[in-house]
Length: 382
Image 1: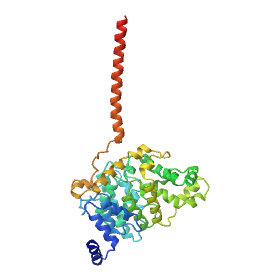
Image 2: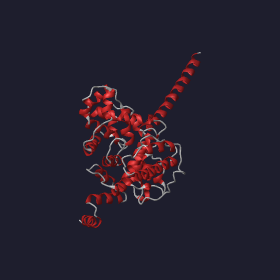
Image 3: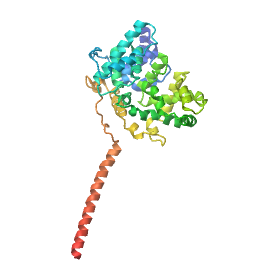
């Protein structure tokens, strides 16, 4: 009752709604109440606005508050292998900002943020569409330092598969979209497959978290809410649900690649909340560990033992730990530490390999002994 009275008092004093106060309190706890925040992310409206999204996203990505200024380099000092390509992509973006001065200023900040990411992490590889994610984050948060910190985390975890030398590393997650569709809607799956449509056709959805597809910042912010607060593979569930949202339109065209792809490039979004709700129900009913054991699933090994999952497990551990135990003073801005499961083999495979090695040694010893016995028998007979 005291907490409720304090919350109502805080509501009157701050002008914030009760939901906003709940979000801020859950994100400020030590450790943050990630379970409650995850529930709120899937409610209508999600984290609602800049202040709450900044706190909630930072909590999920294990970024300590208050965010410290770690010194973002100027564009001149942060030049890297991808500086020229980043400039080309930025110049082609953000045209929906009507005021030219505001548009140019926003482009300059986003360009500086992205270049600093690749200056800091030269082992990562830029992909077209990363600038869409960065722009969406900045348009929502409007704080250069915070967006930089969020991207440092995301590129080490949720977006990690997309930032490898080749987009071949994205194929398992793209293929997962079709696997999920096959489990949920066999008729639509059969129609797309007959048309020659495969997971690669959803690359712009998955790699950009729909920031290149959806047109309103409100819808984009909701996708960011649920993707930041969820499993790295949740974007595949969201993509499958968007396909089902456009089921009638897709089934209404002949099974021809050009015709179906034309429809896919013009998917409509009647209600983002419905798509998110359905994706959440699907995820809870068929979580990744179940899907990866399904006979339809391809790339099982790649998805089950991916670097993204290792980084995600490490991040979840840090996010749910107390501040003093969470990470070193600079850890939140660097690579995730090696966790106990960093081996490419699952624990049961490691155990099996040990027993297998011992068994081989026993068999070899038994074989040698048998050969010695045969040799002694042969000598005695002669």
